[in-house]
Image 1 (cartoon, one colour):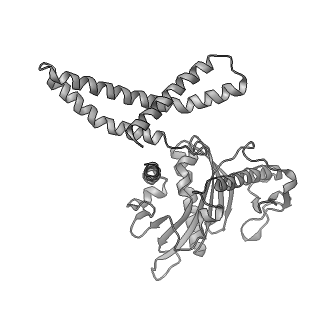
Image 2 (cartoon, helix red, strand yellow):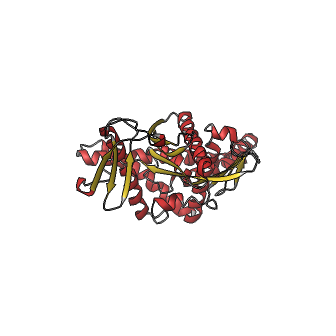
Length: 354
């Protein structure tokens, strides 16, 4: 992006914010008022950064003008140097702020975790990952509501689904989607050999009813008795619900609640999230074509991150970041990875624009 076009873009944004403020002072119809308010709310943080950049540029020009004054030269030189150092960072912050927004970033998310390759060890690690994300959510003040937790009866997890509610949850969790690999010696391993297992994680932006129109005629709803570990019946009523969306083939089963009504409501929430993500995938070619490509097959060779317990390290293979603090990571200390992944994504998108 050339300097001239960048400056012109900043001037257009400043002009647009002034225009929107003037519009909001008029008697706009309801829908127009909402649209203008939303656009202004999105532009105001950018305008504040523009104002900071412009102030720094004016300050530098003033400091340079004072360099010819012997009495002011020393002070002006120091101020000019400080502003020259500050300006590149302000430019970079603005370029990041101007990147196209993923409108789903501000949303809450649906988190789905399932064991893949590795049998019981994969199920045990799936349960640990579920707990890791629960603690991460708590650390950020987000609400973590378990929608489905199907355990193996041995401390493992067959399937875990949670709704993570808060501001910009999806923006911080979306890069967690993929295959997570664990390397460690299982408790049942008498020879001390390290086993490798995998778990799939899917993070979907939560969908509102207005995002996804679900036609009741497109649904097949089956009810059945919920069953626990070992096939023992949790209750004697048909409270479990399985919803199949016939046009897409998406199936959601829910038995966490004792109430059929609550299970149906939770299943519909997950169904909408999966349908919304499918729509996003078709609209954005850079995203996975469907949920399967998001999490892969679960094969051991596919992975985004490896948790190596004997060496105490966690490695993210997408950004070549390895941290030797596996205990802290499993307790929900994920921000080093999340921040690095967000920065890497921003850098890649900035490079694509230049």
